[in-house]
Image (tube, rainbow, N blue to C red; front, top):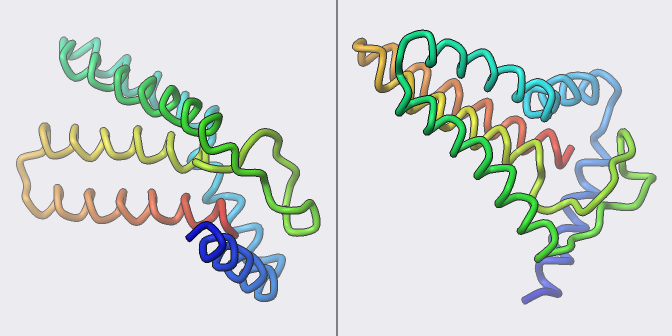
Length: 149
């Protein structure tokens, strides 16, 4: 099974590399940054202040648990899995540490996923909830894909 996964991993890596161009690289770097610790940390801070001012302390606690839980579980799994990053020739920019699970993708899923929950809790419009859920779901998937690209 591991040999199959490694073989598939190499094929995906080489296919994405073969179709890489500078414009698409720039786009996916921008998408990837939407899952960076700095960007998501800033959003967590802003949403946290919003929730605190509104007196939504249960939601604030959920935000903190979701965010810290995402970072904590990602750190544990990185050291458990210990998946090496691809060779430098395939990397758009050099990263350190293990590659799986992706910190950007995990932090994005934790925050934007909880943000979907908040929208569904606060917004009465079904259409707005559906559109927000789909949009943020696509964003989470795009951030995860950008880490591969």
